Length: 585
Image (cartoon, rainbow, N blue to C red; front, side, top):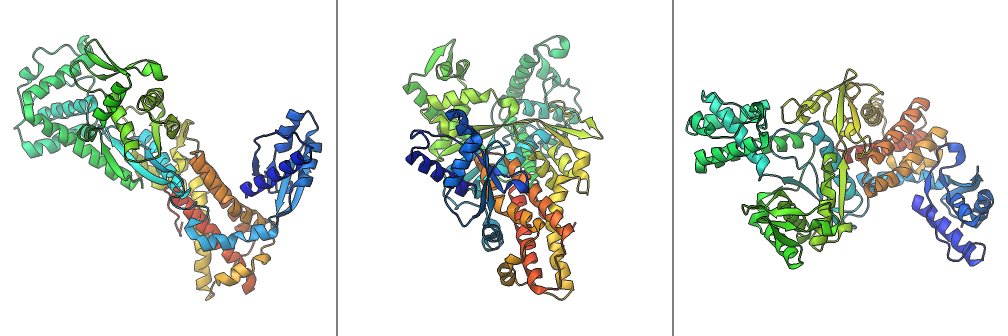
């Protein structure tokens, strides 16, 4: 409807320009938005206020001139000028009441774009290092990324959901070293635990599995392990230098058996992450291994392309990417002095792979602490001769948990963190998914655990789900009374829906596709959340004000059709957010 109103206004402006009443070269962007108060119409436009500033004329007089030129439309009942110069539109009953039939005919496709009608998108989200369980920060990225994927798909995009598995590099070696030290402890050895190691109980659990499989076969003397190592942080040394030296020693002592330790840690944690996300209703089309980049030649091809374009150079024994020439704050090492590729080399290969695999747009969902990756990946795109405008970055801010009004402390390396699994167990996946996307992903989120657990209308997810459950209850009551709902009769009797509460509910249903489209285009699931809350509010107000299961069959059928359409849209919208629509609460 907003688009239709925009077209009517554009036609009015075109007519005024043709008649010489507006400058011929005048172009302006304006907004058509839902009205905030029923008495001010269903939609409002600010075009006259914006134009008046440019023309130095009265906004209200200009608004009246534009309103007079707006073409007739069977969708409109009235066009009025209000206030300082807003143009207000009131929709016709024919337009509003026809929405019930459209909703019931289209089903869960109501508000959706034509499947596959827009560009293909590869959406990468979560991508947490498999060095420990997912925590609540990862949970927000998961809820946001999955909801965004669903929205884009509903909008007509072809969406490929991907988790990038960082299964190579230093952090995985630190995990392997942490597991090995705990393994030695289980074998009866006393060994100091590094300041920079992973300390969570899950590391001990992995070590226990490892020992059950290999017994003491991987045990090595502690004196050989520690001989000649630099001091750790507790002894006044450098924690990074110590852990790197320890990793090198473990590799030397274990030889080919080091891979058993490494793979055991990776496999167990990755499987835990998979199960955790599946229970959170988050799915991926592919779990993309970082190690596969080298096997499939992506890193080699990316570096070759940069070299051919004169963007690589040698310095201090390393190979550098001249990223600063392309907008990054500094140049980046891609091959270390020892000949090993860096993390950034993998980033280059992974970026190239997304477009070599045929995707037209790449969207990265990063935690806000990864904001520094944006300029370097934009520079990478330019260096690889990829179009930066086809690469998007959505930065998800931190989620802070509150329980009993007190902030819950979290720390990933120490192991003292709240896991996503613990959050799900405490508040449920429905509340967690809904709360995570209630606010814009670029805003900090204060997650109230007590509110999320409440079984009352104070809890926003409960409030929306309760509207759907009430619809289901109506049809159970109908059956208990030995009555039936005749859908066709209900659609035909839509003229009986005349109360202000019914009009308000019909209008929310009509506006749902606009909210869905805006949520996809602006990468903002919270817009869908807001639409569902407003729809539920309109339904509850109607439900409390009107008798729906009335004796008169025609009116009953019409009202049940409206209820069914409402329940269907709520279920569809909640489904896009990964939230269930229960029939009983």
